[in-house]
Length: 77
Image 1: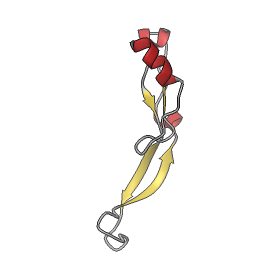
Image 2: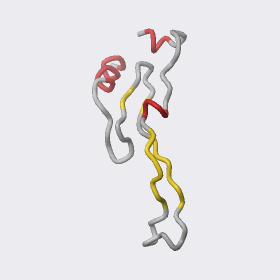
Image 3: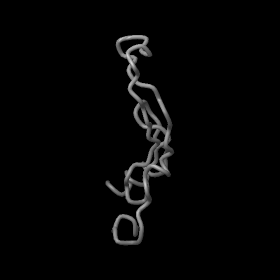
């Protein structure tokens, strides 16, 4: 059932090929690191798929804000 699944999902970190340092907030929204990339100049590229340069990693806590107040029933619990 839904509440049981959400409890299990919220209890574990999410870290795979697409999501780094992820977790679910109380309201069910996903928080994870975000990445800032820059497109490489053609002279910087070493191959057909070598298009981007990682500029910085923004921690999930900084990239996503926690819900404020108790307006949302999901946050109230």
